[in-house]
Image (spheres, rainbow, N blue to C red):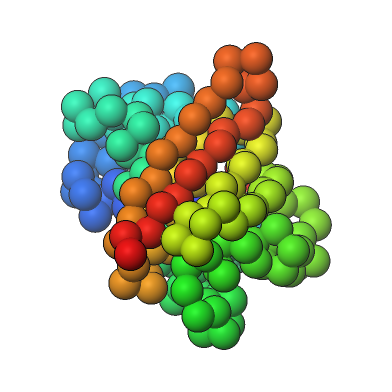
Amino acid sequence: MKGTIFVELIKMAENAFGENAVDRVLDKADLENDGAYTTVGNYPCSELVKIVVAFSEHSGIDPVTLQKMFGHWMLAHFVAHYPQFFSDKADAFSLLESIEGEIHVEVRKLYPEAELPTFSTERTAPNQMMMVYESPRPLAAFCHGMIEAALAHFDEDGGITSQENPAEPTITNFEITLQS
Ligand code: HEM
């Protein structure tokens, strides 16, 4: 997993809990290179999960909520650093539909070592979309947060429900319904 993701997670934690608390939490957690990450490095996703658990224990915020918060943070980061992917989209559904065939395709060209999920989307009503997220990494809540943030980016209100099936642990089905 790209170092940028780790660097941003730690920035979010510093913003939420303060630098001293972050240093203490990272020291206590059993991390490779003592929790020092660079944007150009690549690190195992299991380290990210350990960091989320450590901040959850520190703050009392459950890991799912923390992952969602991080999804919001990351989307803001992408809007600031890759505005071209957002400026030509009319709405959140168009953005979500473009991840698999456009955005992550470009990400893969820039970073061939990136570990990316797979998405498929289907509009089931004018105000409703089904989005199937598939990844071997346990980041469905992070994804959920990014979808919420995508709606907020376009000033859209809506509900997002997620459904997992224990028989297919790599798949999460999101149903996104816009208020119309
Ligand atoms: C709403 C829009 C987006 C969603 C829902 C989304 C979803 C995700 C998710 C869930 C992951 C974690 C990897 C996994 O689950 O297996 C991921 C990774 C990533 N995404 Fe996206 N993404 C979005 C937009 C973007 C944009 C605009 C960029 C900007 C270039 C981007 C770049 C990346 C990168 C660099 C990674 C990390 C790959 C790695 O660590 O190796 N994504 N994305």
